[in-house]
Image (cartoon, rainbow, N blue to C red; front, top):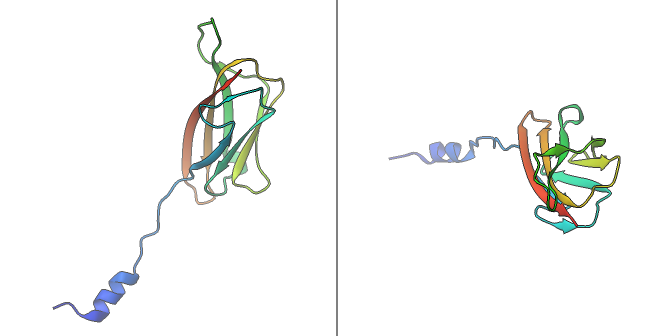
Length: 122
């Protein structure tokens, strides 16, 4: 027979969740077809550390041209004022083609997360 106090004590013990930051939203969105964006906005499920979080953009395709991914020169990623996002700005407008956004973030709790998605500029 299990004692009620023992059951209650076991029910109150919790294990902390070991969740890494997840991408909540992105503008342009994954697989979107858009006009040239002025910036790329990434929002995460929790605050990210400014010095350890970044994003990059590479062109992965262009109509009629086969090529390896080409990093977009002059991009700059910065953590948003709320702390739970990254904004990527480009020195020059993106030309029509397919782009890949890669991100790497570190949360305030020390959890790392990485990811990528693609969108198309028409």
